[in-house]
Structures are given as structure tokens and as C-alpha cells.
View 1 (cartoon, rainbow, N blue to C red):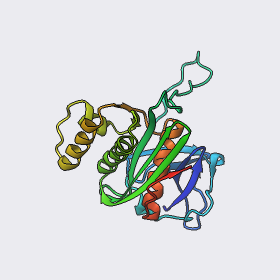
View 2 (view 1 turned 90 degrees about the horizontal axis):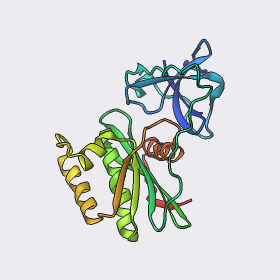
View 3 (view 1 turned 135 degrees about the vertical axis):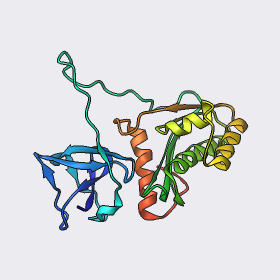
View 4 (view 1 turned 120 degrees about the vertical axis):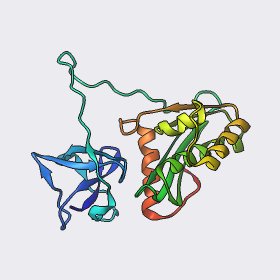
Length: 232
């Protein structure tokens, strides 16, 4: 079955539909993917899915790879609501607060980078198409772009990414079995700008700025275009 681009709260998703673009639901829930090939299939209430303005109506079935259903954790009977996920949205002092993400359609496939950076009274975002690449390359490029911006502006950087791979090869001593040249390049950028703190944030868990970085990365893949850093 094909896929239709929809909005689910603050995120763009791909939702199962028929050939005419009508959502296909089972007991009121529709299969959705946050990224075409991340291997995870989620289900959302049909009433929560809204069509975005100007987006292509339908993508072919092959646009998304196979995915396994993600089960929601069982809620404790004593808990009436899930806790809100806390994540910083404002920089401290003269630092840059940034979130970076990568996306690709196929792995490898057309890939894009998304990032948002906030400092003082400035907010900038980046949506960059990087051509054929893997998801890990796109994630590393997102980190690199944020570090380059911080170095250019001469400000400390606090950077969040949902890529465990990037955290591992850049801060935890993981040995890079692939992407060795790019990993070395990002490590060199971090060494040149030591006033950088890199943190992991869970993806697709309602962290607003991380979701926005993901949207920017997906936008680059869809449009095959790059914006560079632009003010918003």
C-alpha cells in the first residue's frame, strides 16, 4: 500500500493509504513512519493525522522499507498521565543551543541534514541536501554543521542529537568501522572547538526542537535542496 505525508502533532509522518490517498485504518489506527527506513512502525489515531499544505499527496509503497511495530510501554495503574519530556529550549549565557538530525530515503539513499541553533536573540535553521548517503553520514553531518557554526561565531556550543552512533564514535571511543574520513573530520572540528558539549536525546519522543531538526532533514530529502543557515 502507498504512503501519504501527514502531520501528527508537531511532526511530519508517512501514513498508510490506498491508491486514492485515503488513509487505511484498522480499529481507528493508521500505520505511520517517522522516517522512511528507520525500521520502526508506529500506529496513530486517524483523527490525529492532518494533511500538510503543499505536500505531495502519495508516495509509493517502496518509499518506506520494512518496519517492526513499536509497542508502547504499559502504563502503571497509579499513573494517570505520561510525564512530559524535559529538554532545553533556551541557551544559557553566551552559548549556542543546537539540535541536529539526519534523514535518508533508503539506507543509503537521498539524504538530508537538519539543524536548529539558538543564541542571544537569534534563531537559525539549516536544511541541507547531501546527495546519496547513509543515515549515519547524515547524522554526523548535522553535528559537523552545528560545530562549524559555533566556531564561526566564537560561542560555546551545547548540541543535542538523537543519533547514538554519533555520540558513540565522537565521545565514547567507539571504533569507526565505516565513514572513517567523516568521523575523523568531525572529531577534528570538535578538537578545534573544545567548548562543545554533546548530548543524546531520544528521537520522536515529543522533544520539540529535535522534532523540528528532523523535519528540516526530511524536507531536504524531499526537495533535494539546501537552504544554508537562515534566520527564523
